[in-house]
Image 1 (cartoon, rainbow, N blue to C red):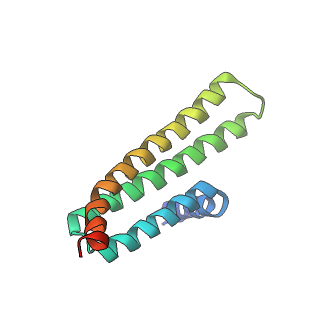
Image 2: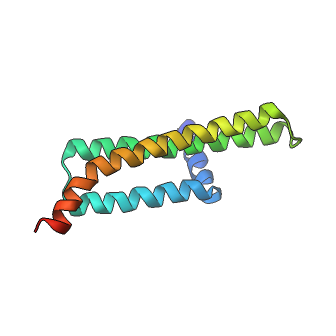
Length: 117
């Protein structure tokens, strides 16, 4: 129970303080609304949920890395910059692939809804 409370506090902290976490959650909600409208299949929903979780979890890990490095010291150091940039790069890669998969899943049914009627 204590671990669950600590994890929940971490997620709440990230949502409360990290703009990019809120942006990813908003994007997930918008994509979910589109998926409901397009009546996606269960397997398509499963893939979307995995992508939402991956991107948001990586953003929270990125936050943890940045906070840890900042706690160690605020002076500029090439390794600190590399660690922060690498963590942010992991989020970027996940987002790029999530967008690509989202377009593959939502694009054809959206095209059909909008133009093939």
